[in-house]
Length: 128
Image 1: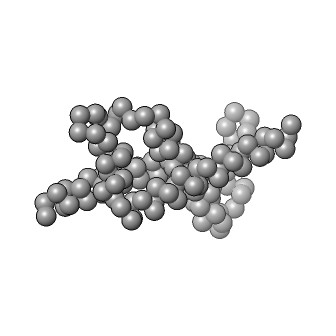
Image 2: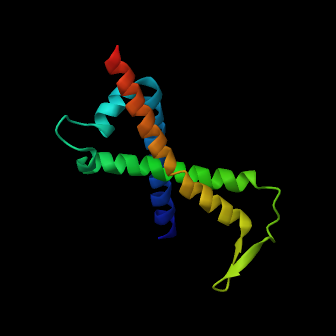
């Protein structure tokens, strides 16, 4: 049973990474296509009514961003001793985990930056 759980988490992680890589590839190669698909999919439909597959795709890409931000920040804080932290509910939480969690939560703002970039690219394409 344990091996099935490991394989399942591995597949979920791999799919998150694939979604993020595809999203970034589309962002740099054809931002107008990405704008048309996710920001303003149809002229009369709001982006809040995206199909479930597109919402899942964006969610998996966002999960990958958050996980990479968490692990990257925790790795960057290699110089902080593991003994620094606090006890919460009988469990010791290191300061590395706390800072990495805050950075991972703030990485959600990257979606807003990408959205603004896509809107700017769309406006520039429509001008000329």
